[in-house]
Amino acid sequence: LAHFAARLEGRLPLVGIGGIASAQDALTKIEAGATAVQLYSALVYEGLSLGARIAQDLDAMMTQRGITNVLDLRGAKTKALAAPLD
Ligand SMILES: Cc1cc2nc3c(=O)[nH]c(=O)nc-3n(C[C@H](O)[C@H](O)[C@H](O)COP(=O)(O)O)c2cc1C
Image (cartoon, rainbow, N blue to C red):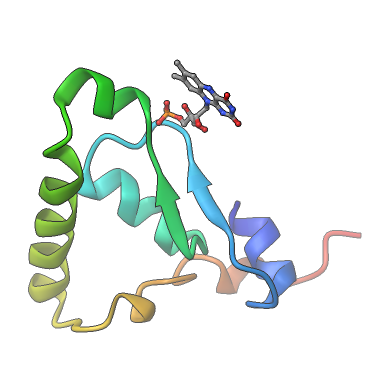
C-alpha cells in the first residue's frame, strides 16, 4: 500500500483493507497512504461498536501527537518510498 500510495501521489483515493481490528491497525494503513479503511472479520468477532471504538481510539492517538486533522497522518510513512521502483 505504501509503495502504491507513494507513486500515486494522492491522485486516487486508496482504501486500506485486511487485518484491521484496532486504531493502531487503522493508523498503520493511514500512514501508509490510505484515504479510508475497511474492515470485516474483526467486526464479526467484536460487534458493530468496534467502528466507534476505533474512531475514538484514533482520536486519542491524534490528541497524544498534537494532531487535529487525520489528513496530517495520511501518507506519513510513504515519503521515504517516493523514489520510482522501475
Ligand atoms: C465472510 C466474508 C465475505 C466476504 N465477501 C466479499 C465479497 O463478496 N466481495 C468482496 O469484494 N469482498 C468480500 N470480502 C472481503 C471483505 O470485504 C474485506 O475486503 C476483507 O474481509 C477485509 O479484511 P478483514 O476481514 O481482515 O477486515 C468478504 C470477507 C468475508 C470475511
